[in-house]
Image (tube, rainbow, N blue to C red; front, top):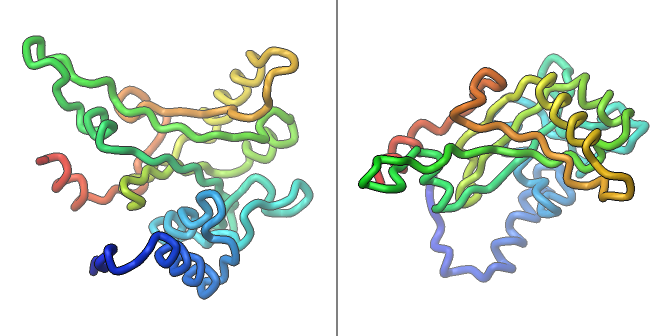
Length: 198
């Protein structure tokens, strides 16, 4: 990948370039929220990202962000990690004296509509993918078991107190301890080799 000299551009110019690239690709609002990450993940996985930011409750794409080549709907969730998170991702030593390492990294996805049974039912019929981004580069994508996602969302919703916000229902997976609950479907091996040695 050729890197541009970012000092030659303002933030507005860089954002405008991303916006225009999205239009060219058929994504009219690629800079809204984290929509731009969906085509990135779709490209890594061989999927086709939906053009719209979100699908309405009555559409065939409801509860999904992309479609697989065989027509299955899938949902994407993304998270961004920073330099501090690298300690958790690579299990680096926290205390040299004891050899204790940092707690393993947990990857989560927020499902704001998952307080309605209709939403949970829709999510139960599709596959889920959680993408991990570092400095806006997709470095890892895991595919949690759909049953695990629905189980967590249902449990969280059942614990929600009356009148509490319906936003923020999260499914999360520890990258070290929950390996029986997901599979790694994309990993930027070159990035992992370079960053693990730093």
